[in-house]
Amino acid sequence: MTTKHPVNVLFVDDQTNNLDGFRANFRRNYTVFTAASAEEARKILSDHDIHVLVTDQKMPHTLGTELIEEVLEKHPHQTRILLTAYTDSEVLLDAFQKGLIFQYVFKPYEPDALKELIDRAYDLYSLKKIKEQLYKEYVKSQEEILIMQVKNQL
Image 1 (cartoon, rainbow, N blue to C red):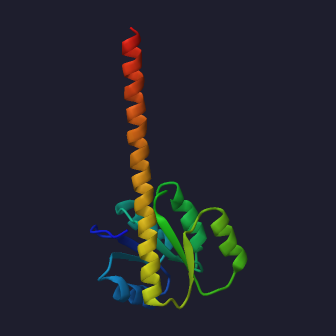
Image 2 (image 1 turned 90 degrees about the vertical axis):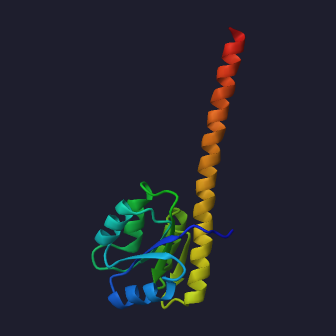
């Protein structure tokens, strides 16, 4: 699935050099937003329609999985990728089982592989939006059919 729409990606990491590196690697491919903390990320998420969230797991005040859990209800279609430098398999398994993340990536990431993953994450986001729209259209058509049946019975 390819898109002509800009893909909004939010990258969250407490290390400035990682934010700069991400922006440098991906600014030509996506509309890149960066946040150095979960608090900054929340602000960006409230102000912009973010399609793909990429967050580091280990940050000083909020873990990446905690941030993801917080924003999941308000942004259910958003696709989430967890970055980690650690092999904490219990945390990763728990995040998958709860449906919090689409995928995880170990640091340091390889830019081409991460780009491919972000593209796939956006495809999933797009499919979720299409599914939602089709469901709304289905419900509307079922309501219209029901109204027509009731009118015909009168």
